[in-house]
Image (cartoon, rainbow, N blue to C red; front, side):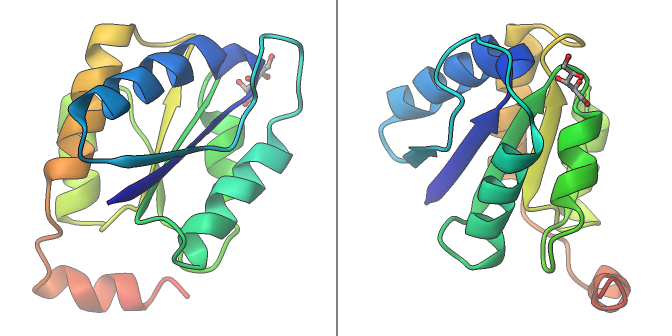
Length: 142
Ligand code: RB5
């Protein structure tokens, strides 16, 4: 499975933690769309790049991190076929996959700690879409 990661400066440390965590599992191909340091950076270009990769099928899932997660999620959800879920705890993370078939997990690097974020990443990637009645609802997004 290929996962594409992206952050601005405010999400850089958490993105790095996610990257190391996923690579350490040895079964996920990780693409890093940047940023690559803590210098101040605009989040929209990174959100567009990660979203494009998911929308065009280059990656199965995306993970986006800025300070709050708000800007990244607003930009990502403008892309056709992208269902970006801004989550800060485990319940909505799980539900975003089960009911919404979310394909981009968005987090706020200034909102949650690394331990919770890594649990959320694992849960997001491991939880299947429930399908059924939710399929026709997702079809109405576009
Ligand atoms: C950067 O200061 C901050 O505005 C950005 O990371 C994000 O939180 C925007 O939504």
